[in-house]
Length: 523
Image (cartoon, rainbow, N blue to C red; front, side, top):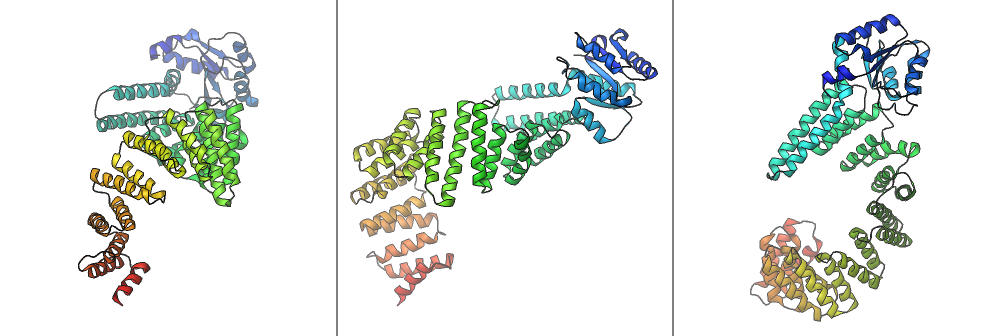
């Protein structure tokens, strides 16, 4: 809506119990070229309300806030009870500079305050900004510019730089609106959202607090604040911010965020209560949640139960966690996180058959996930089912995006069985891992230990020496190498063992095992 259109079409109601001031204000509007016939005048607020009881085209009201008997306040309160009046813009004209008076009016539904005497330039700026809804225009143009960049095929770094400039420009433009709307929470909230996107979280927090100062009932601002505080890991601040909303108007989102904060501060009972209430509001409240969102909420309850189990060493809480994860899976059968958490608890509680069945179900959903095949293979190994284990582990390697790591994991799985016949298989897979990527000191160390276990001293020495060459500051590697030398028939084995034990002690003075072995050699 351009300024010319506003002047020629905008219907305005002026309210003041002083008729001379009404005529003066109407003359100001005339000098600004507003259509004289579209400007209505009223000195009686009750009479003014009658305009809105039937169809009324008034889009802007300018009202004197100092009318007798709080007539202006009563008028605004009664006006906003009438259907269809929510979109009417209200400007309060006042000579008062008390912030509490202005804030009270803004919270009541007034859109802007203008000081008396009313100057033509100031009034024109207010009207144009209000009727053009400048903040919405800024948001819209910013979103369009960002979308255009995302559709371009520029490199990521260049795109991010362009986005940053657009967001910074939006902040500058909204700050102008903040100066224009100094008592409204919306600009501060919008700036906070942009600072979040820029990763300027402390600045975002400051603006969300400012928005809440002007409207402490703004749940959007409070939730945005809590989410940013979550990124900053300021859990106690989240509890402080959200607790009043739980008393005043609890919602599923507020309760979930509060539960996470309680969980992170060790208040597990409160976390369980908040998460459970969050699920209830998500199921039955006005704030309906999608199946995936409900699945995520059940997941949080399950995690709280698991934490309670660790705190109390009471396995009954694990059973409660299992029930929560099973509920999570019911809400969203393809929610992989629920499958994996449930699998871990089944395995922890010794329910290996259930764990295996769950993994097979998970693999049917995501057959490309190497980790699931690997976990299934390990279960089959624990159950002694070698053919099924071999099939699953082969699949894990085939699906892996990092084969050298998966070969190592498979090797470890064979070692964990404790069967002597599986040691050769473990060596084979670890050797394959090293052949694919030699820079793996942890794999070489494990391989050396496996060779020692098989009595293959020469091979163990070779593995340890390669590992030490890659990480010469690893005290455990020096110790393991010393032990390997002592069990070998290498020339100067004893001397070399002493050298590596001394190096281990040099790197870590508090190493009693190395000191004891060194003393034993020298005796």
